[in-house]
Image (cartoon, rainbow, N blue to C red; front, top):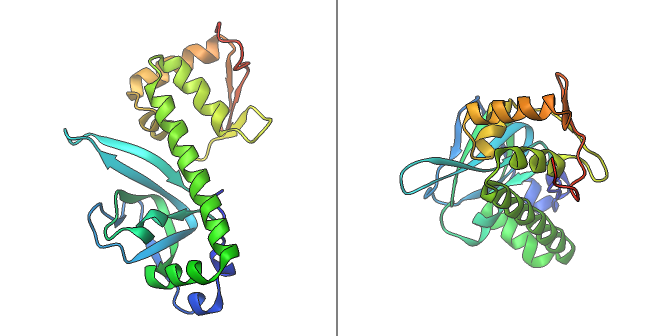
Length: 206
């Protein structure tokens, strides 16, 4: 997770924190809106979205409880993407000015913030690499391997599979067809709540 738990912020920042509840599908902010705050997800799930020049929606990443969103807006005048609640959600709202001052005067907080940013950009890089793979089969396998905890190959499903298909830039039909074939071939095992990849990433003859 992208830690930096908001209750651990300096007291002078905490007193300025408010909270906001979002319904499923509700927009937290849109690209181009004035950047006035950063947000910590307390419950629910948010999705960051960008759009191509043709207006096609491109999911960037998902933000879960305990993670932050819009941290790049601390250094910009406007938000650079749309953020939408995938399910009913609650966020802590931290004013931008208060957070910037805290980072300037607290080196430990600033260091943890940089770690959080590095993890976020590494995840985004991984997502872009997956979308560049031509094979739907390979995208699916590599996605679940990347989402599994370190040293494991099992992923708990906390989102609809159609949302994962969108993340990977696949049509629902292509995703479900490729997933079904992977299950038939024994490369992936699926139950109602988990997916396990029976695949050695160093051996690509599957």
